[in-house]
Amino acid sequence: MGSTICLGLISGTSLDAIDAAACRFDEQGRWQGLLATRSHPYPPGLRGELLDLQAQPDQKLSLRDFARMDAQVGDCFAEAAQALLQQAGLSSAQISAIGSHGQTVFHDPQQIGTSLQLGDPNRIAARTGIATVGDLRRADMALGGQGAPLVPAFHQAVFASDLPRAVVNIGGIANITVLPANPQQAVFGFDTGPGNGLMDEWIQLHRQRTYDADGGWAASGVAQDALLRAWLAEPYFAAAAPKSTGRDYFKLDWARHPADLSAYRPQDVQASLLELSARSIAEALLRAAPQSAEVLICGGGARNGELMRRLAELLAPRAVRSTSAAGLDPDWVEAAAFAWLAWRRVHEVAGNLPAVTGASRSAVLGGLYRP
Image (cartoon, rainbow, N blue to C red; front, side):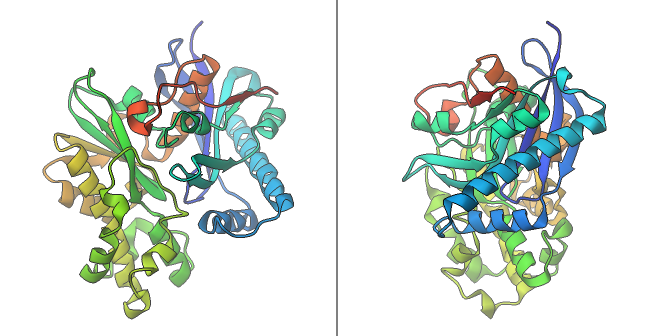
């Protein structure tokens, strides 16, 4: 059969852009590497609408607007895939499948037991001419799982070694994967809480920037113990796994609830938000994976030097480094994971880890949409 190429598409909770990755897999579905990558921006107006919808899930929204946004996101994802193919000199005939995560706008595993991603996969398949896998979370949730995080299965496939490792994906929300050295032991993971999301919201509000480059603004402030004590009392942090969360929960309204943020210098609040992310991640790792010898970081947080510095301090003597050290650029791990999940859906291979999500059994994930 030889190797195959699949595309992975995802826009995370930060809505920075649509990440697209072309990945090669061998005939057994084993990862062989990245062929090409692309970061494809949303139109500013649509991005703003999506951020509002994500942050305010109880707002009134007409079915017409909801349907329009679903179609628009699908078109944007299709454009990202087409631009990547053109950039890489690949034809649609060379691609086995596209795995499209879509854009999460709602995630509630506890009360409703469902998750909602926009980006009609029918439109992606029709515009690209490539079979598209979408709706990847809800099969797991129908089996009682959290539907998240899904990337630990890919982390296991790519990053497992003869040393105990942990992988931390820091997007808008952070999640961890614990990879035991013994392959007979179960891999597990969960969402730890805030990643970059709260910091992004705060700097957008005060400095009209979409993110804090290298954590420079946070580094100019001083973390406030009173804020950290109030925030770290959040019950989610102490809750047992499996668990998952989203930016509809960890948003600025959440941060404002136990504290008057206007009483502090804005840069001190930013420093405190960075410290919150660092501590909640580190404390979760120290509880869940005390034996880990190495911690690999991926996602946008790997580019935040100040956050990486604090994680290294909090997790010492463990080595803390980006996934580049293990052969995969931290910016493209999630997109690659959804290419991998697409391969597994096409070949009817389970894609979830019940030990991570809490599902009653393994399941083939996603619907397959033909062009």
